[in-house]
Amino acid sequence: MNPVSIRELAKWYGEIAGLNKVNLELQPGITGLVGPNGAGKSTLMKILTGQLRPSYGEALIFGEDVWKTPSARRRLGYSPEGDSFYEDMSVLGFVHAMGRLCGLGASADAFAREALEKTGALEFSGKRLKACSKGMRQRAKLAQALVHKPDILVLDEPLNGIDAGGRREMLRLFEELAASGATVIVSSHILEEIVAVTDQILFLAQGNVIASGPLAEVRGLLKDHPLKLLVTSSDPRRLGARLIESGLVTGIDFQRRRGLEEEDLVLSVPQVESFYRALPGLVSELGIGIERLVPLDASAEAVFGYLVGEKMGGGA
Image (cartoon, rainbow, N blue to C red; front, side, top):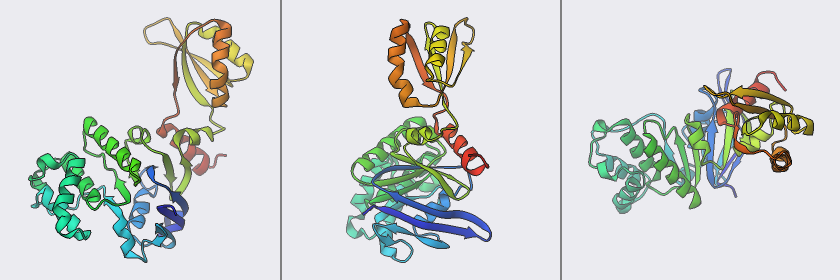
């Protein structure tokens, strides 16, 4: 049984669809939610955590409907995007109180300290929340989501306000949690950092899941958008001519490096795996070197832009 099952899930706000017949099966690991404001990410998270009732369909936590079975929510930890604190409480007091609300009883203090240590917040656990920085408050929110050791974590913009070093710490924590068997669902606008640790990405737009899977797999499905590759070679002109002759690329361009006479190749590659398999042989045949090979439009932002154009904009 999968930790999360979403079946025909829909949420309507009057005539506007917040979610439109979404079907998903999520396994342990890290799932990233990607989409612009209004895509349906927060609606999906709020339904999944039992805060919002769906118009129809169901969200199941280990087979139990999260709306009809409140006890299923005990297996969830949730960190919202916005703050909702008792500002005069200390960080430790807040996480301890949340642990008690989750049924921890006398063990709440020990569990709270453990969660604060994991999120790097133990060192300022005596500080009042109203005196905490944005980054400190984010760590406190993450700690309260972890305090009862849930099987599923739902994290809405958990990296907001945390510096680059702190974000790396949090991403390592997400990976550790996933490795221990947790299902971690993360929404973030810092796409490339999140993508680096996700097992799969859900691309949402206008209440629809328009694609899902590992980023490279989703990128490979975009047949109308050949991958753009930047190649630095010792002889770009000969390499470009040979690649066109081979049929491995559908187009080439030359890009002069800033302030230099040398040129780089920009290739349009329709079949990426075939290209990578054939390239070493072609380079050896020509007797030239490859110094750099960089995808230009394989980022989450680029893939999402293509997806929206194809699925939502009247394209293919």
